[in-house]
Length: 158
Image (cartoon, rainbow, N blue to C red):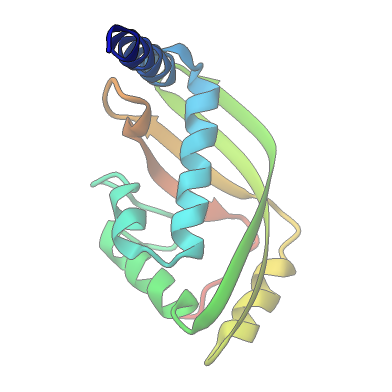
């Protein structure tokens, strides 16, 4: 019985040490890259509440979107996909303690209805990377939020 308690205590200590490292031991670059992958996964899963939660309340982009309209338009563009795979490649990163800019080349694969083939074609034909502007809004690694997303080549229909 005593051995069981010692093993249990050792597991708790290891778990706390891992959580401490995960929370405070990773560099800002590691934190924002991890959040970028969470964002990509949320888009692939079309988990719009997760996507919206990763955008700052004051999100604004070059296309005139605020936080709500950006998510609504993403839902409209990606909602017809039955399967969606996003293949990101970070080609540039600039990270300071509470701010980050990532340039990410994105290719997508997917099958779906409606305008899904048009979306795949348009995204995959972009030669310029997407810019993701991140801001850390609190002390935790999951407090990184997206302030703006844009691509210099992307033209959205009016």
